[in-house]
Image 1 (cartoon, one colour):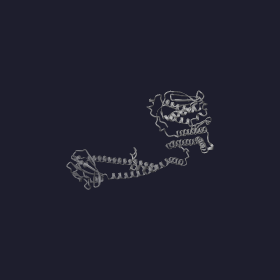
Image 2 (image 1 turned 60 degrees about the vertical axis):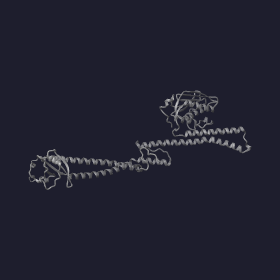
Image 3 (image 1 turned 30 degrees about the vertical axis):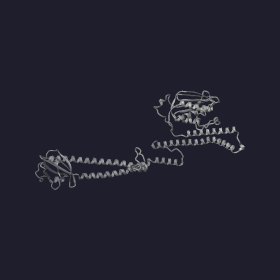
Image 4 (image 1 turned 90 degrees about the vertical axis):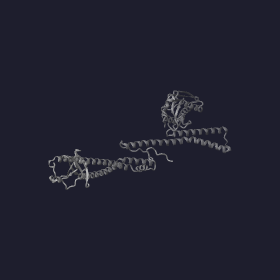
Length: 486
């Protein structure tokens, strides 16, 4: 049973999802052209509509004002005052004009001097002006399929003068204006589409070059950096991709070196283990080659030691190869307690070495197992290099753990490399170990936002210093929460 769709996403198979899928199947250039054309088309449409409405309103307002002015002037003209009949008004003056004229009495009598033309149907507005109930009126009236703008003003007692003008010329002008705007709008949309095509073609050229280079890298696996031109967003993308290539190349080199070094380190214990097992197998299979009990016990001890060394080496390799963020549960850890546990383990391994310990309380947020392994490796290293019946001095104060031994110390030229994987100085190659112990210490320190460094102890041996951020009291860590380690 499928769960609900994620927030902001349409469920799979719905119409909205299909529309988005169709949209993103289109190329970026086509989307740029489409969006540019739509944006310009909408802008042109709004501008044209606004211009058309503005012109129409302005023409109507101008016509209304002209009709009112002419009506008031006609009402004041003496040639129209109190004529008893239309024969007394010069008809040629009315016909030559573009207006139609009528008189409306308060008794609803309509007097039209020019009876040759049909006057629009008058109504209550004009009658209200004749009765003195309104100072003027203006409206649009349809008659015979033609629209007229009709204006009425007071003329004489109980009469109103009505002028009507056809709107056909104005409508013809508006029709021509609309056609011109439509043509210019279509031309603008076509020009916008061409401009969008040019912008998409030229603007996306660096993206196409970057895509070609990335496809070449994916095909050949050659992590060569990409050329960066300019300082725009595409250049930043290429620069970020180059940084990713550098990190990927470094990670691949680390993996390659890890595999090579691990194979080299695993070869020695495996060869020794195979040799000892072959000797035991031959001795058991050939009665003439019976091994003395002491030699057989020595071989078995050697096999166990090799197996233990191999197990330790594999565990160290797994620990060092883990590049993903720490997924173990982190908690408040008492470093003094961890140090005591590590000392108990190392004392069993090196019974002839004395350990002097001076600790103060110190709490950190981290992984107890990783911290114990790092501290154990520091103590193991000190015990391995200490002379017989030597003393290892350990001090923990304010988050700084120092481990001093009385061995030969670490040469100055070797100190920058002792925390590298599989690094072993010429003096240490004849001694047991894989060269991974201090690398694990360095990795654990970095995962816990700390550091580790090598120096010289007061006794002339090596001093290894591990710094871990934390607090003297465990409750001081609760506000910060678990440490973020990687």
